[in-house]
Image (cartoon, rainbow, N blue to C red; front, side, top):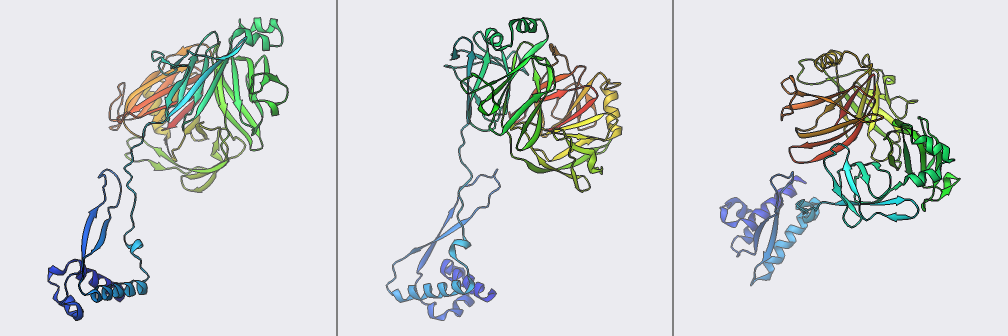
Length: 479
C-alpha cells in the first residue's frame, strides 16, 4: 500500500512540476522522459475567513493540452488509474470540496398579535409592549403586529384597549407566530361564579393566571388560593372538559409567586410563575420531551484562581421540578439528571444540599456549574451586608462573557422592589461598579417575588431571563 502511494506521489510530481529537476524521478520513467508535457495544474484557493475554524483545500484541476501523440496521454492515465485502484484511493476522497461557512444570515423575527376579550373578540390594532426590566422602554405594535428578534425573550407587559395588562414570559427561541389574549374586567366578571365574588376580588390583592397548553397536558393546578377556574376552547368559549380546552383561566389568584403544576402522560413537572396585581399572567405551556442531562459541578474558594471539583452524595442534588427523584452520580463532580421534563423555554433549576441555607442553581444550556465554597459564601454575605437569609435573598450571576450593561427590576406581590447590586472582579474585589473585569454579579433583595434581567455583552448580544427571589434561598444563575 505504501509503495503504491509513493508511486502516485512520484507521478504527480512528474506531471505537475516537471521543471524542478527531479532527475531520479525522470529516470524512473524513462519511457516518458523525452515527451512533451501533457497536463497543466491550476491551483485554486477556496475563499475563507481567517476568523472561522476552517480547513483550506487546494483543488488541483488537470487541463488537457493538445497532444500530437495521443498514446502518451492514454498511457499516463492508465498508470495513474491502476495505482489508484490498487491503493483504494479516489480523487474525491483525496480532495473533498466543502461549502464555505461564509453565509449571510439575516436577523429572524417572531410575530405577536393581541386580542382583547370583551363584548366582542377583536384583534387590537394598537397596543404597546413594555419590558419589565426597563419600564422606560416602550415598543409599539405596527399595524396590529409586534415583531421581536429571535433569541430576545419577550419579558414584560402588553397593554391595549380596555383589557387588563397581560404579563408574558415568552422564550422566542425560533421564528414563530404567537397570539396573546387578555380580558376586560366585564368579561372576567361574567366568567366569575357570581357578581359578589367578582366585586370582592377587586378589593383584594389578586390577579389572574391564563395558561395555554398543548394536548399533552391533562391537568394543571396552582399552589395559591384562587376564586375560580374555567376552561376555554380555541374560540374562547367556556367548556367543561379539559380535553376540549386550549386554555385554563384561574380567576382571582392571590398575587405573588405561584408554583404551577402540570400533569400528563409525561408525568409531572412544575413551573414558577408570578401573578401580578390587577394583571393577567399569560403562560404558554409546551412540554419538551423528557431527557437525561449531565452537569459538572465545581466550587470556587477564597483566593482560588481556578474552581475545584466537588464531591457530594447523589441524593444531595435534585431537579427542582422533580423533587421525588435525585441525580445519579457518574464520577467526582459529574452528575446526571434522569428523565427531566420541562416546559419549553423554562430554565432548569437544581436544588443542592451543600450550604447552611438552601442553594438553588439555575441553568439553561450550561453544563458547567460553579457554586461558592462555604468560606466564599460567608464572605459574600458579609460583603453584601446580609446577616441572614431569613428575610432576604441573594442572586449570584456567573457571567460567561464580560458584561457591558445590566438592567434588573424586582417585583413582589404588590409592587416593584429595590435591589442592591455588587460586582466581583477578576482581581477578587467586590465593588459597586460594573466593569470589563466583572466575573460575577450579586443582587440582594428583601422580598419574595421575581427579578427580570436584561444583560448585554461587549458584542451587543442580549440575554433576557426571569429568576425568583425567595427567603432563605441563595440562588446561583449560570449564564
